Length: 358
Image (cartoon, rainbow, N blue to C red; front, side, top):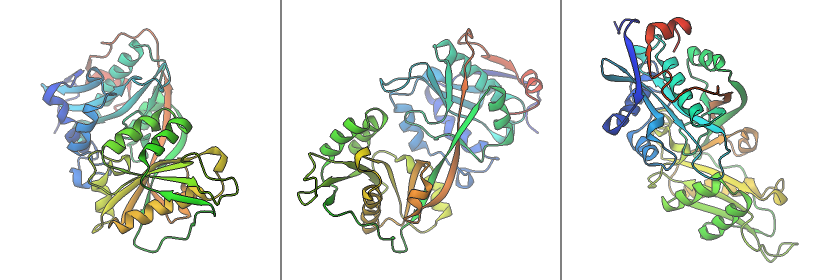
């Protein structure tokens, strides 16, 4: 039997070595199953990458403590790059170990984190989709108490986002480049120039990190035989990971679950990718994705994740199918809350206010 509901919960930053307890807490939150059976198994390696991110603020990684031991955490972020909108903050993840759920601990954690974000000047919070994110949104597998908690904070729900699985074992459907186009994987400088021009902001920042980490970037460009003549540079880009890079692809955040669902294969990922608005709809983008997938297959990859997309029908033309689904959500933040609001809460009081949830 777990702690009594009258036990006090202390909420404070997880600092030093205690910050490394997050993967165990996260994995234990999914009905208490070990990481190998969790739907979103968080690895220590990925979490260390997140702790090293320039977007990580240690004061926004909060732990819930019972008798001095962490039993849950909440991780938030504030804008750290010029491309991020002012006044917006993010909740990257909230989790409570299954043995301690149902006592209001999650509500206490989220309340304390939102108070800190509001005190820093944020007026809106988004759940997931943060820079160097773990999740694009709220996993559909989140328990009912989590959804009720979000609604109590005024959450508004938007589009569903998907991680897609593409099986490379069968032949890929045909998707040739239109005449006058070519695919390259040897022009990272051209890719960076294109992304900086066509997709300034998040993708430009991420692409540099992916290239430094060993990912392959494909580009498409017009050749001299094109009716409009050769391109001055790339007109599209696509990042591909074959696993083993020095940086974790967002498509491989949950690699252990992917390997469990599709055993015996080698994992890879595709994304982000984009093409110039002027050439969309002409088949260039799909041909680029197919070319990247074919190249990964030649390198031994059998299972690919195309992460964080609403374009299931587009990628479905190559055989991709939804594997994980997330709900985009955001909520207004109250003003006037101090950074220490909710820093110490009675689990019994919080559970009473929240109907025994979270």
